[in-house]
Length: 51
Ligand SMILES: [Zn+2]
Image 1 (cartoon, protein in one colour):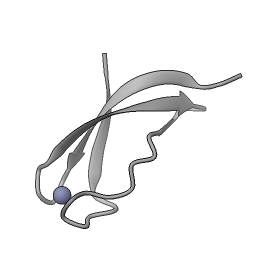
Image 2 (cartoon, rainbow, N blue to C red):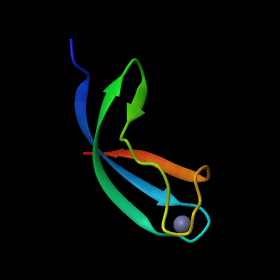
Image 3 (cartoon, helix red, strand yellow):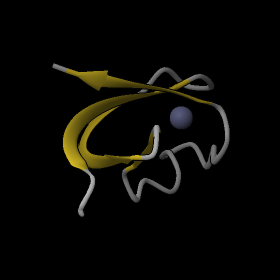
């Protein structure tokens, strides 16, 4: 079974940039394929599902 499709909003905690992406939720984890922010941050993000 394929994970549930969700829309997620990702906020970079370094520069404050926001991204809205489609992802999928699987086993309580959200996969978006998002790799890094424009500011080269790859780790400090706040990720929230959006309704
Ligand atoms: Zn950033």
